[in-house]
Length: 219
Image (cartoon, rainbow, N blue to C red):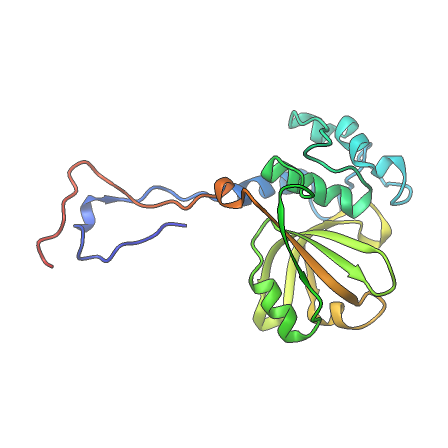
């Protein structure tokens, strides 16, 4: 994000804005370039054969998947809590972005008011890269990495794994409020895991002044 100053303070020609780059978005895009919607996040890069098989186990994925190996990443339980399916992908992506485990590096906030107002307030406060856990009323959980939220459409977008019970990923997976509120996948709660080092990983960028910049005399 580039912060702008009032135009009258500095002569426009003497302000050189540094190009803003969001490291969190950049890291997500690195993984998205390797794992697009429909690609398998598995050890062999193929159909998992079930979402709780060793082919979908994170430690095996990081040891054997050629795309992960090409990044030079190695499994480290202190950064990547081990697990299967949706958990494995969310754990991996959080660890890749923040270089720490979501279990030990997060400030958590839980939502139990699963109403339009509650969901809107919750998602409006989420940031790209947050890990979110769904608690299903029928039992079980789902883990995703938050990307964005459209309040006008009452829709949250995320990057997640295990579509249709397979170990395949979906980028910009859309979840409407109605998904959380009704039906067989309604939730009783949502938990957000915000990295404690979020602001260090994604700092704010300010304009830089050229060496001959000077305050405007038109104050």
